[in-house]
Amino acid sequence: MNISEKTINNYKVLSLRGMLNASSAPALKTCVAGFPDEQSIVIDLENVDFLDSSGLGALVGIARKKKASKAIMKLARMNERVKKVFEITQAHTLFDIYDDVSAAADA
Image (cartoon, rainbow, N blue to C red; front, side, top):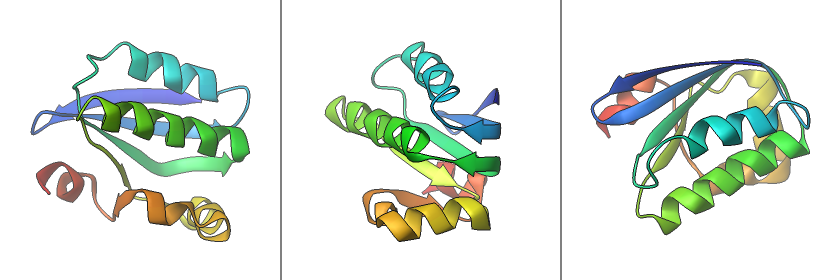
């Protein structure tokens, strides 16, 4: 998995490309751990080809840590493959999900 980052309106935007699974989830956690605890983030999922339970668990864990630090984590541009996993697991109820990265950073 490749992770690119940029900043929009004080949000770190992480754009993921590839598979978010047991082998790549630690890289995402390490990337986010490099930010200050109070740094709010948007994770762009448009180019995630595959998401398994480990990847979903990583997203949930990051969201919990951000919430505990009074920061915000949002998800954006979820493609149909990823959206299906969120719907099946009911995980979509746990996150603020946006169709656009800029909208997520502006909201």
